Structure formats: structure tokens, C-alpha cells
Length: 363
Ligand code: CXF
Ligand code: ZN
Image (cartoon, rainbow, N blue to C red; front, top):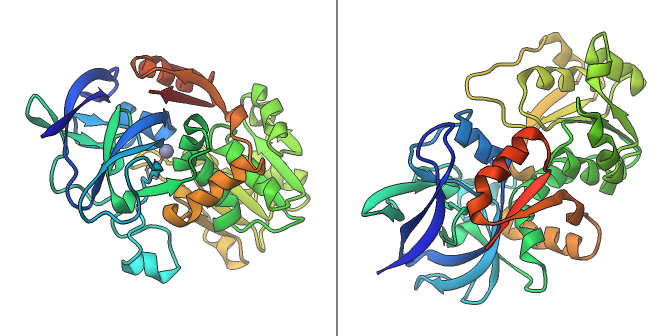
């Protein structure tokens, strides 16, 4: 038995997604069938579409969503039909070395290729992003890739906790552990950078510099916590040098939220030479390199990266949803466009042009 679903399928790099009817297998004992209510368009999906990141094709992209449980496999314990859930592109099995260590949020099942296809197109297997594939009316998720959330929270807001909100807020709060009174520079004021800004504000940073080549992003940046806006296009000299001056010696924390290897270098060089910590959040294209003078590590400046904001989904997403419901974080103003599944290609066009911050597909 299978469930007939409607999904957006990526058949070839740089071609529009095609909306098709596919067959989704029934849940195995450890799987859950989820009706997707809202799914966000994330820049990583665009990376798969344009080939900056690669995956076997054809595939159903999409990893940032919220929905309702329709059916559970016999071994599933943590959710039941009717529960509201957020799928997790970073699973949390709770029992692997990573999950038990307290040193990482990346469960051993993160990024592990699937052994068995779950989606079919006229009997032929179709892949899916992050063992999810949420650009579809329904998805199958392993129990470890699912978290139950409160049922009074709107799907078309909390879907964003499944990737962007948690990635950005978490990078500042959980990973970098921004301290009260500190200075922060955020490079790239989009769907992730704005969340890093509000995370830095939540953590009590006192100087928060937003950096973007699009000055139209200044108003949003300030609304989400920026105290200064800097457009590198208006600066003749070295961007890092200008930011070192602007922060009177370098930021305590910097965040790269674009995925540009040259900007990673600027973000590193703009933080304080003795204790500045640069966090790479943007996903740079496969194969591209940044370079650093190793002498600049000697005195204490450091760089590290962050996936999903250091969050463990089953532990931290319910808390993110509470923060939204309590007005501690703003999601409403980031969800700039509401679309239908068959408008998904226009949604990615708006992402490319910078017209949208987040577009959400409502089912
Ligand atoms: C990304 C996270 C880093 C690796 C590639 C995919 N996922 C979410 O947007
Ligand atoms: Zn994402």
C-alpha cells in the first residue's frame, strides 16, 4: 500500500522543479507519515537546484516544514496521529555517541545516505532531501527526525524553526554563546542573518553590526537588532579593516551567513585579534576554499562552523516554538511570501532576486 502524494521534483540541475504525483511507501515500524501543512524555501534547496551542493537525481527537495502526524509505524513512541510535528533535517536519535556526548548536535544519522527508497514515480525510485523531502503534500520521517510541538502554534510560522530560525538564533545563542554587552558582526542579512541578529540581541549584545551589499536590508536589520548597518559596496578599502575600526579593535563575535568564501575571510579578519570568534553559518559551494594567515590564530582569534545552530531538534525546537509564541523571537516579519506548491519555481526566483526573505508553501 502507498500514499499518493503531490510533490515538487528536481530532475536536472538548473531546471525548474516539476510538480508530479508520486507514491510514498507506508511507514516502516520506526517511521511516521506526516501531512505537510507548511514548507519553507531555504537557500540550501537552491544550492541543490543550481548544483552548488549535489545529490543524486531525481529528488524531492525541502527540509524545513511543519505538519500533522497521520500514521505511525508499530515501534514509534514519541508521537501519535494528530500530533503537530516539525521534521528534523538533523536527526536526534538520542542514543548514538554524538547524541550522548554533549559535544555536538550532529547525530550519527545526519547526512547518512538512505539504504532503501521511500518515494516512487511510476514504480521508479525518487530520492529526497535530508531523508525528508518536504516539498510534498506528505512525507515519511523516521521518528528520530521528528519532534512534537504544541498544537496552538501556527504551521506557517513554526515551519521556519525546522531550519532557518533555529540555525540563526542558535548560532548566536547555543554555538557562539554571545555574551551580554559584547559586539557582534553579521555578514549577510537574509533569512539566516536576520535570525542571527535577533539571537545576538536576545543574548544581550550591545553593538550589533549588520553587513550587506543591499542597503534595502538596513530597515529589516535594525528591526531585528542591528545597531549599525555597513554596506561593503560603499567602502573603497579593505572591508575587514573598516569593520575593525568601526568596532574599535574587532568584534567579539562574527558570523558569515552567506556562504561566500571571500566573505568568510572578511568575517574572520574582522573579529578581535585576541579573542574574536568567527562562526561560519553559510554553506560555501563545493570545492571552494578560503585562506587564512595561521599567525592570526596564535593570539587567540578562532573560527568554527555551525549546522542547525548547534540545536538538538527534539530538545530545542519546542523551546524555539515557545520563544515565538511568547514574543521573544519574531518570525512573522520574516515570512514575507505565502505561496502554493505549484508556485514553487516563482518562490525560488524571489529568493534569487532578493525580493523575499522567507517564502512558505501552504498546503
Ligand atoms: C544545510 C546545512 C549544512 C549542510 C547542507 C545543508 N541544511 C540546511 O539548510
Ligand atoms: Zn535549510
